Length: 368
Ligand code: SAH
Ligand code: SF4
Picture 1 (cartoon, rainbow, N blue to C red):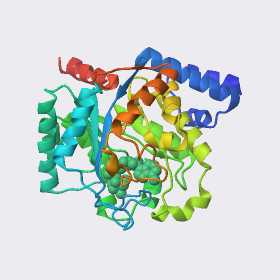
Picture 2: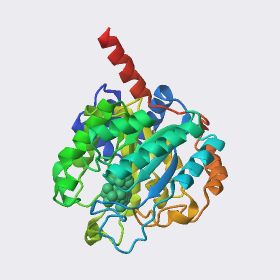
Picture 3: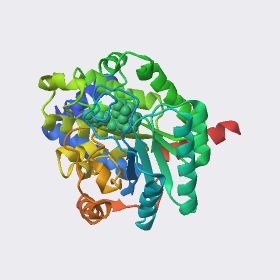
C-alpha cells in the first residue's frame, strides 16, 4: 500500500483516480501524505501563517441554501446588522493588533443600497488604515459591475465557495431557482478573476450524498479554474435547515474532520503555491482543528473579530466555536496554539497568494 502512495506522490500531475486513492489513505499511507503536503507547503509558501480578522457583519440573507443556519427561511434566528462604525472599529482592532488583513463576510444581498454601503465601508477602512490593511470580502454572487466597484474601493481578495463542484450535488443542497444557480456561481468566480481579485473558492466536506469521486472532482475543479485561494471545511449539520433530515446518512463527525484534513493535504500537493485557509468549522469539531490543518498544508487563519454580542447569531452550523468570547481573548491562545503547530505568524503582512503573483507575472510575460 505505502508503495502506491509513494508512487502517486512522485508524479508531476495527479489523476482523479490518484486523488481518490489519496483521500482513502490511512495508517502509514496517511502519515506519508501529510508529510509530503507539509514539505510542499514549506517549500512553496513557507512557514508563515497569515491572519484575516473575520468580521461577520450581518446574518441577513436573501438565499435559502439547504445546509445553512442563517438561510432566509429560518425564522428561529435573530437577525442582526452591525453598524458601519462598529465594523470600522473591528477593522481598527485588526490594525492595532497587527493582523495584516481583515475579511468581511455576511449573508447574501443584492441591492443598490447594499452595494453602496459596502463601497463606503471599504473606502473608510482603507482610509483609517492608510491602505495598510488587506481586505478580503465574501459577499456572495453579485454582478460584474458590483465586483468592479468593490475592487476599486479597496477589496482585493474575494471568497466565493462553489460548495460542491458537482452540478447534481449542488442541486440537491440548494433550492431549484434562479437565486441558486450553479452556472451563475461559476460565472461569478470567473467574473471575480476578470475584475482582478485574488479569487478564492471552496467546498463543504462530508455533505449528504457526497462521494469520494465528488471530492476528487472538487480538487480538480479548483485546479482547472486556476484558483488563488481555498477555504474548505467539514459540513456541520444545523437543526433548522432542510438537510437535517439526512442527519442519519452523514459520515461520523470525526471522519468528516479527517477527510477535511486529507482534502487540504491533497490540495496542497496539487496546487502548491495557493493560500489555503484552516476553516473555522474544523475548530467546531476539534479545539486544535485549525492548528492541525496548518501543520499539514494550510497557511491562513481567520480569527473571529466580530463584536462578541453578535457572534451567537451568525450560526451557520451547530457548535460554532468562540461565540461567547471577546475578540481580544482569542489572541493569546491562538498565538500559543500556532506556535505548537511550529508556525510563525506573519504579523502586519498581507500574505497574498503566491499563486496569484505568479499568474500576474505570467500575464505580464505573455503581454511582452
Ligand atoms: N453568504 C456568503 C458568505 C457567508 S456563508 C456565501 O454563501 O458565499 C459562508 C460559508 O459558510 C458558505 O460558503 C458555506 O460553505 C459555509 N457554511 C454554511 N452552512 C454550513 C454548514 N452547515 N456547515 C459548514 N459550512 C457551512
Ligand atoms: Fe446565505 Fe451564504 Fe448561508 Fe447560503 S450559505 S444561506 S448565501 S449565508
